[in-house]
Image (spheres, rainbow, N blue to C red):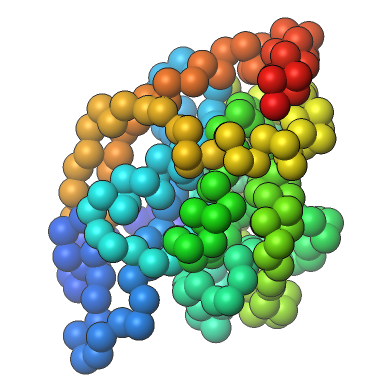
Length: 246
Ligand code: UDH
Ligand code: MN
C-alpha cells in the first residue's frame, strides 16, 4: 500500500515495453487485453468528473493503437489481492471487484458494478459502452449493469474469496459531487442505451504520450457537465429535458 516513485517502478518493471505494453516471453497470449483507468488529477480542469465518458474515450483510443479484444475498466485506487481473479474476458461481462476492503469485503448490493469490470470488445460494442451523461459521483456503473441486462447478457462474478481488492484511502474529490439526478437517469437507461454511449461520444485528444509504464491520454469531452453538476435543481431540469429527448 506504500507509494513508490515512478523511477523505482520503471527500474523494477523493466519487462514493460513503451506505453505500458506487456507480452509474455515464453508464449503467445490468447487475448490482447487493455486496461482503461479513468483518472483526473485534483488540480486539473474545472469540470465535473465523468467516469463513464472517460471509459468510452479510453476504449476508443486504445483501439486506435492496437487490436484489443478484451477491456478491463479499472478505478485508479483499487489494488487486486488475488491473482486467481484473472484479468481476462470470459463468455459474459464480469464484475471483478466483488469484495473491497472498504465495503468490508462484501458486495454492497446485487446490481453493484463499480470499481473494476472486464468486458470483451464484442460485448462492449453491443452494449454501446458506458453512458456519457453521468456527471459527478454515482450511477454510471448501475447504468452499465442495466445496459448489460437489457442487451440480453449476464453479469458474472468470481467468488468473494478470490475477487478481492484493497482501496487506497483518498479524500473526497472536488468536482465529483454526488450526482443528484442519477436515479432519474437510471429510469431512462433502457431508452438511452442505443443513443448514449460509444456511438455518440465526442471528444478531443489534447495529448497522448507513450510513457514507460502506461499510455497517458489527456482528453477534453465535448459534452458539458456543468449543468448536471451544480445544484440539484439545475441538474434536475436538465435531466427532465433529457428524459423527454430519450
Ligand atoms: N476519479 C479520479 N478523479 C476524481 C474522481 C474520480 O481520477 O476526481 C476516478 C478514479 O479512478 C477513481 C474512480 O474515478 O478511483 C471512482 O471514484 P472514487 O474512487 O472517488 O469513487 P468511490 O466509489 O467512492 O470509490 C469513494 C468516495 C465516495 C465519495 C462520495 C461522493 N462525494
Ligand atoms: Mn475509490
